Length: 526
Image (cartoon, rainbow, N blue to C red; front, top):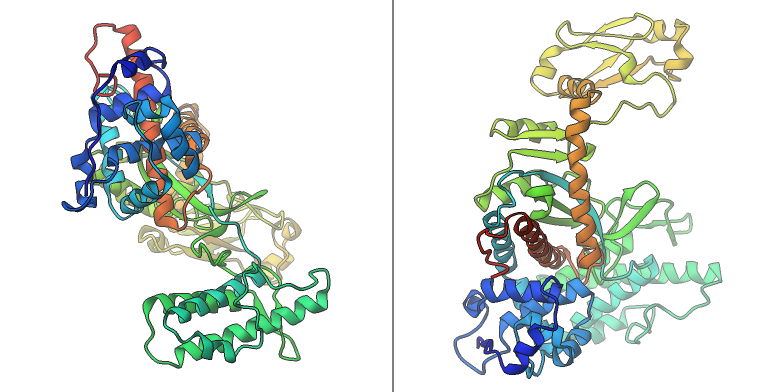
């Protein structure tokens, strides 16, 4: 049953108000919560019957404090009992008994399965608009950042071992695990070990272990599937076990399992959080977990407008269209979008240009891994339907394919290329030089020329404002994932964005009030 917040201030609460800075996070959160949160917003999460819970206003603000300050559930439980600043920010009286960790987990689980967080985020955008943050400048920037997974990545041995134990545990729920145990070679799956006990310095023991684990996994998978239709939770566990047991494995000449060289595509890296992935934001730094993509807007692109989360291996720009649509669904618009080279998705750009949007994005420069002539050294004349190499050899191309956005390939005559004095500077192939013509080659070339101008450089420099907002998000709860799975991680990023938007709006209000003391009162400051 829905609990009610006690917001009746006592004399001690009035005393505390003067002790906490009006510009502190604690005061900002309190003033926002007093004006913008109420129990009725959370009613869909609770029954109308039973014993009243702690007010969801208290638990929601406690979760925001957790992310802002990096508190664990136990730490926020203690702080909500003994820290006056925390009680003040939660809008709770000083004699409030606090929120225990179990209640916090229960309320969080309810929020995971609702869209209330998203609705509140949209509310912070509306507050920013009412404060004037979108009046003179509405700078929209799209960018991404890595979110480290809440679970550690696991090696292949651990994943297979834990995957087998997971299937056996579910079989135990259906009271058929004894038969399953009897067909397995190893007998330690009912122990609490994180991984089997062997001499991990001995390569032969490791090889034997891997073979045993893989064979046990395959036997267990076949056993479960042979039983016919199986429950969803068991099917999910078996499918996961199959993936981790086979993704890095091949059989040697003796039929024994061994590791393959390299990394499987879209490799699962944890059985406790199967949606985590290896990813790279730069070539030198790898992250394990998730990737967040956001669009920011308003003055200095300080307000988070939309958030999407995916595996860390998903390319930047994968959700550009989703984010734009998400903003449009809230009744907001994106007039012009700034992004780096990852967002030069010309198919999406042309689609949005037809809707009236403009873009300021960079395109990559041509490269040649072999060190020879880049594509830019070739004269590509789409109107004439020709491509001319640095030595003057001309080959035809189909301009209709470019017009129809299909792309094409130009292959230069092998005999002429092999006799060419510039061959060593162009290609190492004896089959002639080949260049690929992008479906949007004309747009890309136009953009490359425009990127050289001062007009573009000055305009594109505005994109860095979005990076500053990302820096704020990652400093205050957005870098380290706290929960398993993309869905829950997205909820975490939404909560972090709510905090960011409240603080950014208040900073804007203070700046505005300094220049115009007689301005209107904002709903955040009261």
